[in-house]
Length: 161
Image (cartoon, rainbow, N blue to C red):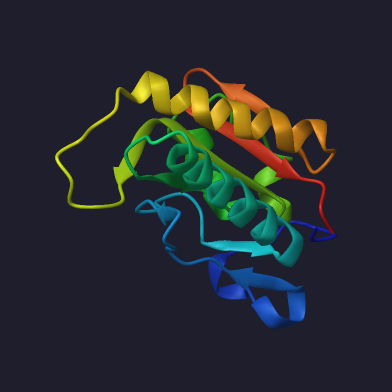
Protein backbone atom coordinates (compact mmCIF):
# COMPACT_ATOMS: atom_id res chain seq x y z
CA UNK A 1 0.00 0.00 0.00
CA UNK A 2 0.87 3.65 0.07
CA UNK A 3 3.53 4.55 2.63
CA UNK A 4 1.54 7.60 3.73
CA UNK A 5 -1.92 9.01 3.07
CA UNK A 6 -2.50 11.36 0.14
CA UNK A 7 -3.39 14.86 1.28
CA UNK A 8 -5.72 15.95 -1.54
CA UNK A 9 -7.28 14.41 -4.64
CA UNK A 10 -5.29 16.62 -7.01
CA UNK A 11 -2.08 15.20 -5.48
CA UNK A 12 -2.84 11.67 -6.72
CA UNK A 13 -0.31 10.50 -9.28
CA UNK A 14 -1.53 6.95 -9.82
CA UNK A 15 1.41 5.68 -11.87
CA UNK A 16 4.04 7.09 -9.52
CA UNK A 17 2.17 5.87 -6.44
CA UNK A 18 1.63 2.36 -7.80
CA UNK A 19 -2.15 2.74 -7.93
CA UNK A 20 -4.58 1.55 -10.57
CA UNK A 21 -7.94 3.11 -11.30
CA UNK A 22 -10.87 0.77 -10.90
CA UNK A 23 -13.77 0.79 -13.33
CA UNK A 24 -17.10 -0.98 -13.57
CA UNK A 25 -16.77 -4.60 -14.72
CA UNK A 26 -19.26 -7.36 -15.53
CA UNK A 27 -19.00 -8.45 -11.86
CA UNK A 28 -19.07 -5.15 -9.95
CA UNK A 29 -20.10 -1.51 -10.24
CA UNK A 30 -18.53 1.49 -8.57
CA UNK A 31 -21.13 3.60 -6.76
CA UNK A 32 -21.19 7.37 -7.07
CA UNK A 33 -18.21 8.04 -4.80
CA UNK A 34 -18.61 11.19 -2.73
CA UNK A 35 -15.93 10.62 -0.08
CA UNK A 36 -13.34 8.54 -1.94
CA UNK A 37 -11.72 8.09 -5.34
CA UNK A 38 -11.60 4.88 -7.45
CA UNK A 39 -7.95 3.91 -6.93
CA UNK A 40 -6.40 0.83 -5.34
CA UNK A 41 -3.01 -0.84 -5.30
CA UNK A 42 -2.59 -3.48 -8.01
CA UNK A 43 -2.94 -6.28 -5.44
CA UNK A 44 -6.10 -4.78 -3.90
CA UNK A 45 -7.59 -4.26 -7.36
CA UNK A 46 -6.92 -7.93 -8.16
CA UNK A 47 -8.47 -8.97 -4.84
CA UNK A 48 -11.61 -6.91 -5.55
CA UNK A 49 -11.91 -8.56 -8.98
CA UNK A 50 -11.35 -12.03 -7.49
CA UNK A 51 -14.12 -11.45 -4.90
CA UNK A 52 -16.57 -10.04 -7.45
CA UNK A 53 -15.87 -12.77 -10.02
CA UNK A 54 -16.24 -15.50 -7.36
CA UNK A 55 -19.55 -13.96 -6.24
CA UNK A 56 -20.91 -14.01 -9.79
CA UNK A 57 -19.59 -17.54 -10.42
CA UNK A 58 -21.21 -18.81 -7.20
CA UNK A 59 -24.57 -17.34 -8.22
CA UNK A 60 -24.27 -18.90 -11.66
CA UNK A 61 -23.16 -22.34 -10.43
CA UNK A 62 -26.14 -22.43 -8.08
CA UNK A 63 -28.58 -21.48 -10.86
CA UNK A 64 -29.34 -18.14 -9.20
CA UNK A 65 -30.09 -14.82 -10.96
CA UNK A 66 -27.11 -12.74 -12.09
CA UNK A 67 -26.13 -9.78 -9.89
CA UNK A 68 -23.09 -7.52 -9.57
CA UNK A 69 -21.52 -6.21 -6.38
CA UNK A 70 -21.60 -2.50 -5.51
CA UNK A 71 -18.30 -0.95 -4.37
CA UNK A 72 -19.13 2.13 -2.32
CA UNK A 73 -15.82 3.35 -0.92
CA UNK A 74 -12.23 3.09 -2.09
CA UNK A 75 -9.17 5.35 -1.57
CA UNK A 76 -9.73 8.30 0.76
CA UNK A 77 -7.46 11.33 0.86
CA UNK A 78 -6.84 13.14 4.14
CA UNK A 79 -9.26 15.78 2.87
CA UNK A 80 -11.95 13.10 2.27
CA UNK A 81 -11.46 11.68 5.78
CA UNK A 82 -11.77 15.14 7.33
CA UNK A 83 -15.04 15.77 5.45
CA UNK A 84 -16.41 12.38 6.53
CA UNK A 85 -15.51 13.08 10.15
CA UNK A 86 -17.25 16.46 9.99
CA UNK A 87 -20.36 14.72 8.62
CA UNK A 88 -20.45 12.56 11.77
CA UNK A 89 -19.23 9.23 10.36
CA UNK A 90 -17.83 7.42 13.40
CA UNK A 91 -15.91 4.96 11.20
CA UNK A 92 -13.84 7.73 9.57
CA UNK A 93 -10.68 7.65 11.65
CA UNK A 94 -7.71 9.90 10.98
CA UNK A 95 -5.56 6.86 10.22
CA UNK A 96 -8.17 5.20 8.00
CA UNK A 97 -7.23 1.96 6.23
CA UNK A 98 -8.88 3.54 3.19
CA UNK A 99 -5.96 6.01 3.03
CA UNK A 100 -3.43 3.43 1.83
CA UNK A 101 -5.02 2.04 -1.34
CA UNK A 102 -5.53 -1.47 0.04
CA UNK A 103 -9.07 -1.15 1.40
CA UNK A 104 -12.49 -1.04 -0.25
CA UNK A 105 -16.09 -1.36 0.90
CA UNK A 106 -18.68 -3.61 -0.72
CA UNK A 107 -22.35 -3.06 0.09
CA UNK A 108 -24.21 -5.98 1.63
CA UNK A 109 -27.64 -4.39 1.13
CA UNK A 110 -27.35 -3.12 -2.45
CA UNK A 111 -26.67 -5.32 -5.44
CA UNK A 112 -27.07 -4.55 -9.14
CA UNK A 113 -28.97 -6.81 -11.53
CA UNK A 114 -26.56 -8.06 -14.18
CA UNK A 115 -29.13 -8.96 -16.85
CA UNK A 116 -32.62 -8.07 -18.07
CA UNK A 117 -34.40 -11.07 -16.56
CA UNK A 118 -37.41 -10.57 -14.31
CA UNK A 119 -35.99 -13.05 -11.79
CA UNK A 120 -34.94 -11.35 -8.55
CA UNK A 121 -33.35 -12.46 -5.32
CA UNK A 122 -33.82 -11.32 -1.77
CA UNK A 123 -30.84 -9.11 -0.77
CA UNK A 124 -30.38 -11.23 2.36
CA UNK A 125 -29.75 -14.30 0.18
CA UNK A 126 -27.24 -12.32 -1.91
CA UNK A 127 -25.50 -11.22 1.30
CA UNK A 128 -25.14 -14.87 2.34
CA UNK A 129 -23.44 -15.70 -0.99
CA UNK A 130 -21.13 -12.69 -0.63
CA UNK A 131 -20.35 -13.72 2.96
CA UNK A 132 -19.32 -17.19 1.78
CA UNK A 133 -16.99 -15.72 -0.83
CA UNK A 134 -15.43 -13.33 1.70
CA UNK A 135 -14.97 -16.14 4.23
CA UNK A 136 -13.13 -18.18 1.60
CA UNK A 137 -10.89 -15.24 0.65
CA UNK A 138 -10.16 -14.47 4.31
CA UNK A 139 -9.44 -18.13 5.07
CA UNK A 140 -7.05 -18.24 2.09
CA UNK A 141 -5.13 -15.36 3.72
CA UNK A 142 -5.85 -12.88 0.93
CA UNK A 143 -7.81 -10.28 2.92
CA UNK A 144 -9.16 -9.05 6.22
CA UNK A 145 -12.93 -8.52 6.43
CA UNK A 146 -14.85 -6.30 8.83
CA UNK A 147 -18.64 -6.16 9.01
CA UNK A 148 -19.71 -2.49 9.14
CA UNK A 149 -23.21 -2.53 10.63
CA UNK A 150 -23.98 1.21 10.41
CA UNK A 151 -22.47 1.61 6.93
CA UNK A 152 -24.19 -1.52 5.51
CA UNK A 153 -20.98 -2.79 3.97
CA UNK A 154 -18.12 -5.21 4.30
CA UNK A 155 -14.86 -3.31 4.84
CA UNK A 156 -12.18 -5.36 3.08
CA UNK A 157 -8.43 -4.85 3.32
CA UNK A 158 -6.39 -6.78 0.78
CA UNK A 159 -3.30 -8.66 1.93
CA UNK A 160 -2.28 -9.24 -1.70
CA UNK A 161 0.78 -7.17 -2.65
